[in-house]
Structure formats: structure tokens, C-alpha cells
Image 1: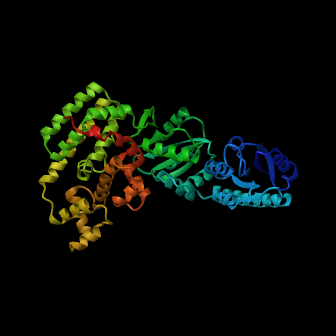
Image 2 (image 1 turned 135 degrees about the vertical axis):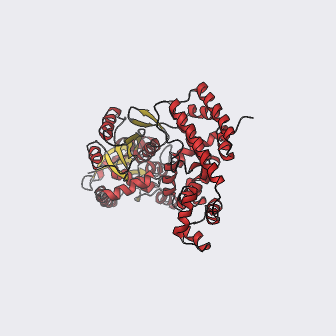
Image 3 (image 1 turned 90 degrees about the vertical axis):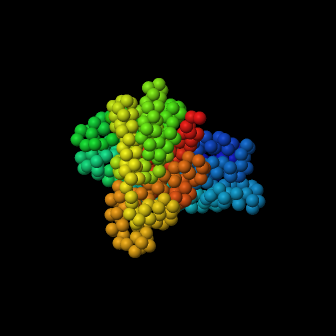
Length: 500
């Protein structure tokens, strides 16, 4: 039996609809009546009806405006209008509000009951589709969640996720992400995950997501789960915050993924999501990242030593947290050119990716990385690249936004692509594709910091043709999503300038 609510400011209309219509025979239970749009909205929030029947004109708000609000927050609720105004503009507004039907007063019992039966048929079809959707093979469900993990916030994707998770807009949920730093998640770990009271899905062979439908995070249970997962393997479990509905699922999943990178604070063995905050911002004011960047690019050891000395003094005075230090390293990483941030001395390892017991040990390891990067850059400067490698590197530097590939450059040089790839790897320490990826991310960072352009437009402008892939690669490199990076770094651009 489907639930129905009626809203009309005329009492006799409410009484007539209640008494004259055989609701049960039409497949409905009349569970609420309202005389104002405000009361109707309260009933919809409380009862979550399958069908809302509303007058077009009511005190305080048009029925079409009420329908627009309901359609936004409860897209599964079907809407039926009735009115005594034979004006096409009202019918047109009803159509624009995605109404199922439009009836004229005075009511015709047969017409109303036929309309209700058609509404029931439509609701039956929707319910059958939802049941088929909920029985989708896990691989299809994982594809939906994977797209959301990569940044897809399309309303249709979120609605589909809500159906798969059986989440109403007000239902609380939070996400966790298990990642194995060494490789694929083992069969043992997957069995442990299956014992958790959560919906499990695969993001990649080395990452699995968990959705918990709870009003607060059960950190004790997650700690126990982490212990079972970490006894023999190098697994980390990160946790997002509690939010509501499908949009909340997307947000919590993004937070849990960002907590696998930079944006986390340790709670025992767990990584709890923590946004870039005032404390981290204050530390960036002390760190003088522009001076560090300039000393690395200049290749002057004495200049770097002076900057490092100032950095240690600032740390002794400000006593930054590990979180603030990680944020500093991630910000510096985004300011370095591709050849510095992906130097041969530290292939594929971002500056922020450190594990240390305390801040002093972390800072020591970070400074060691800076020296290694400078040494590698100096070695590359001293080493004369063959002309073919110089051509490939220059093409990446100037044509990164084009659909560039090694075959095209090798063809222009009349060389074998495999041999050119070997030369690039030998002399730069990185593959051609990785250098190109790093160059594109390098150019995306200032666009995220300094402009309000949509992430999709920025991705296309730097050479990515798939925004989901861009989001995924950006998070892998920078330790946070493009949206989180923009929020964290954009307001602090001026803080990077050296003191005058």
C-alpha cells in the first residue's frame, strides 16, 4: 500500500477527497492532510509519502513551488496537482514541476481514481526497477561507487547510489577506506571486511570502501577491525565524517579517500579525516615555502641550507603538528616543477608521504628529501641529455595540453618509440608518460589555487579528457582531491611569498 498526502486550503475539498475516493481500492493509504504548503512540507518530511496531491494555489506558497522543493529533496515522491483555475500557465508550471498529472476542480471521482490507478502502476514499475537495481552484480555496483569516488557528483549517479544503498535523504552514513600500501588487498582481508556491518565495494585491487549506516562513527569497532587487518599486512583504514543521504555518502567517501593521503589525524591505528585548518594555515606563514622552492630550483646548496636552518627555527618556535607538516609538504609539492617533484632520487614518492613517530623525526626525513631532490636536480643539470631526450622533455614542457604521446614524438624524430622511451627513462629517471602526467598536474595546481574554473574545465585545459581520471591521479599525487586542494590551498597563496 502506497502512502498519499493531500494539501489544499479548502476544508471541504480535503473532506471530499477523503470520503469520496476509495483509496484502498486504488492502492493507496491517505496518511496526511494539510491546509498550507508549510504543513504539507512537514508531512512530506515526516511521512515520506509516495504521492503528494496539492492544490496549485495555497496561502504563503504556490503548490508548484512546494512541488519544486519536494522534487529536490524527495525525487522519488510523485506529485499530482489539482486546481479550479483553468489557466494554461498553471498547467505549464505543473509540467515544469515534473508533475504526474493535473486535475481540475470540482473533482470527478472516476477521473481521480483512474489517475490514482495510473500512479500506482507507475510506482509499481519504479519499485520493480529499484529491486532489479538492488540485485545488480557487485561489479556494476562498484562501477557506480567508483565514479563517485573519482568525483562524479551527477544527480543521476547520486540517486542511483542512494537506491543501491537504500539511503533516504535524511539517513545518516559514513564511509571508510581500506588501502594496502604494498599491493592488492588479500583474500584474508576481504573476509575480515565481510564480517563488518557495512556495504563493501572495491575501488581498486588495493583499495576497498565500506559504508556504515550509523548516526555516529563506532571508532572502537573500527579499531578492532584495523587490528584484524594489520596483523600481517600493511593495511591502513581511513574514516570520513557522518553525513546524510546519497550526497552525504559521496562527501564521506571523498573524505575517507583524502584521509588516505594528507588530510588525516591519527586515532590509534585509524586515520580520521581532518580538513585543512587554521593551525595548518598559520604554519604555512612560518614555513616560507617560496624560499624553499626557489632554493631547489636555483640548485644552490648554501641557499637551501640557509632556508632549512630558518625552517628548523620556525618549527622550534611554532611547534607545528604532524598534520600541519604534511599540509606544508603537500603544498610545496604542488609548487615544484615536474622535474623536481618527480626527481630520480625519489621516484613517485610525494614529499608529504612520510611516516614518523614525532614531528622532529618527520621534519628530519623531510629535509633529507629536500637535499636528495636538489642533488638529483643538480646531477640532471650536469648531465647533458641527448638531443632526442631534450626534444621529448621540451615537448612535455610546452605541449602538455595536447594529446601528446611517445609514438608521435618518436615519429617526428624518425626513431623507434621503444628506444626513445628507454632513453627518456635512463636520463630523466622517469617514463615519458609519468613526466607528462606530472607536468599536467603541475599546471593544474595553480589553476585550482588561483581561479574559480570548474574542475572539469581545468582537467581539459591541461590535457586530461576524463575528469574522473584526472581526479584520481591528482589525489594519488597530491594526497587530496582537486576540490579539497582548492579549498585548502587557494586562500593561502599569498602566504607563500617570502618575507620582504
